[in-house]
Image 1 (cartoon, one colour):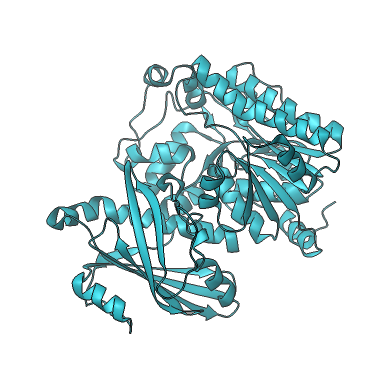
Image 2 (cartoon, helix red, strand yellow; image 1 turned 120 degrees about the horizontal axis):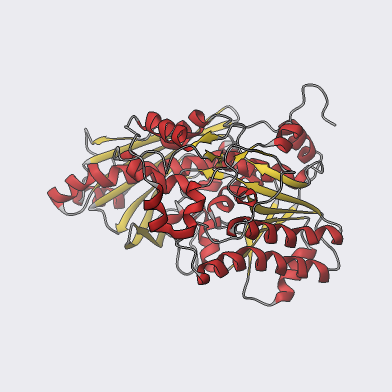
Length: 500
């Protein structure tokens, strides 16, 4: 029972401070929600194990401190991992809007949810020691298209493909209750975030002033900010009051037309160009039901539990995602200083940059902890948007004076091989990496750290020259600057999730 004045956040932190640190197995850890959940659970002190399809890819995306086991490996490895864990978070599932729902696509969607959950429960049945809780994903698609009907956790399910898929998914998870686990079935709404999900697909036409409502625009859209959904998961793991179905949605669902207007207002673009329903049906077939169906879902259980949303309003959520922290880019006003590095001086003499990017980030951690995190090459992938497919081939080198780091990434469809060299290495204070091989004519990235009480201010200064001469300078404003802003804003999101 919650005492007067207590919030669920208070209870969470009191529980954790009493030593309730857990070992948590995660499926779907490299997905849109999983990548945001990992730093939150790490911030709370939990040990993490990710059950993944590719260990190499997962290590590149999840950072230095997450153990991995492969789905295709020996089933005994999964059983052993479960025996050593206190909790499971099951987020596995191919994206619902990944194409038309052909027979093959429907099987992929079902296997990635129902079959994965079935495999987990089978392994739990064999395990000699079992975790205490399973937080398993589901979706508000459980309810089907219900027009203006208010939907709570005890509302009846729908009958369409997505509804029956969610029911089968939840049924598999519920089997774990008979094995003694507390099971939370999290019915997630449309998750809004910077680096994926529905909003990333919606924004391009809105940025061009071509956005607007879908179909009639009257259908309800149950939404939630990415940071709130991972906060719900983190609390459900430790709070025994969570159980059964929980609607993972913001307090106030909005109609699609109001959602479009809010996006337009935040972007300062017109948002009145509708997309007719017949166009969506022609493009997506039966999958268009996700866009045209109406679900007025209420988070009744979260309200009962006293959950404190970070982003309870759509305006605040979109302003955070679309706006984000300040990243300033302008022409460089004076020559870049190599700051005592002979190697750096030779580089800058040969390739003096012409543009400068600056951004500052407040990290809610002491200076030594912050510097240690950002000077681990293994954490670079965690701080890079998933679409860039960042990876470090081979052994990961220690970051120190003169070290070189080779990595691969992708910008759009273009694969890039990059080599950075570390200079001006001053532990606890600063370091510089410059591009020794890669797409830029020059790239000089200064990282400076300074204590501010119990927190740390991290100042980034990137001095660069695009490739391709005059053409590169034209591309800089239209493409490079927006890309760099998104990268550094994504990094700031992960820092906020990891350190608070």
